[in-house]
Image 1: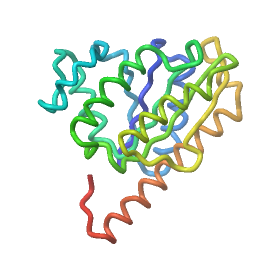
Image 2: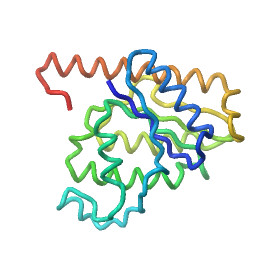
Image 3: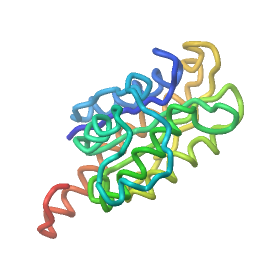
Image 4: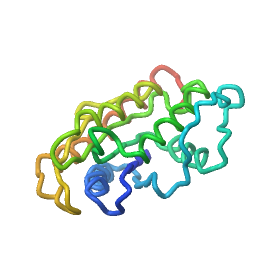
Length: 198
């Protein structure tokens, strides 16, 4: 079982990364293989809305979109995390949502369908709900399963400050555990119905 934490933060080792790592550590303690992927480490251009991917099943832009897409395809579960920038996801995460989302739809949703997904939003004070909403909307659009406790809010501004938000950290750890349990349940249902692993 592989679970990926996908960070949309431009700050390496910032609060979003820290909360994601807490969730991943909890998932690892439950037996999952985990890794952290930072969207800003990939070269992604904004989507231009040309819709050519619906015909070719690939993006016309020559960048790292397909490489990042395949990283997500290889995972059984994905935890998306973003700080709140003006009440929404960062530009990096929005580009991910637009590019990967269109490509997933163009390929018939089959690559993401029934994967398990959770979201984490970090903010100084406000914007966590709308930030989570954008990421959850992406996940439901591509057919992913959201577990109980699949939405985490954490508070912090300066680097490392989020560690003081014990409720946020505990919620992230709960999400990590629920990701593992939900993936296991989904796998058992597929097996009992003779459906191959996606």
